[in-house]
Length: 282
Picture (cartoon, helix red, strand yellow):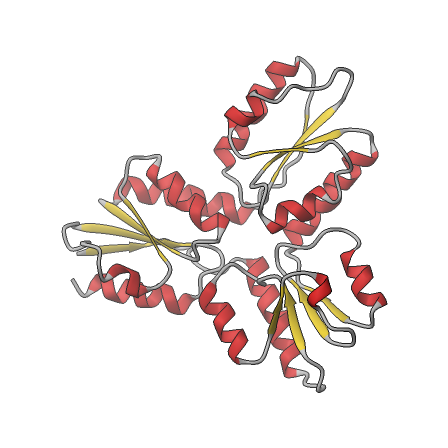
């Protein structure tokens, strides 16, 4: 079996920075308990590793004890929550991805200018909840072009378009064109999709044309991992989404002569290496 590994598989810049900040905080032991506010990244194996090192997981700011230390997840948090934590004597380390932080600020600028947000993203995703907190009232979130088509724009309202940073670039461009034609006016479209996401998706598409099957490694809760699988499937290439090498035990991959391998932006290199070694053993 020939295995073709994507060059950009694994941790992106934002994930690497977030984990480094948490590691630096743990190295500076001061006796106070350390928490992450929501999963710092969407990878269960990484989270299990930090749990073994004593890092607690707070699902909301109410679960962060006063006087403790907390790291804000790479996906960011809603505006105002960091200030509330600081007022309770919590040491806050902001590990929000710089690309997410930039998207928050851009959305805030357009909202202050009186425009209303149309957001291409997953309504229940933590990054989206943070982005919406900068948008003001009336924002509309949609996951598919069909959902946007069913949306009735209000008369006299100026709209702007943005996307969750890990969304599909091609899908966003299609939505932008259709929205501009539908509203018959200039729609401000923010460039909020991360370049790393775009490059990974482009590479995944090229991989789909070269391989008989593509294995995508990453947490099932990871939006960017799922979208890698989606852009490959859209090319008609069989796609296998796994979290660890153990997930391949019950899947017949030996029938493929050439297998591609890529991974989401929150997948550790060690997991990718294990999967590659497993595939090459056939």
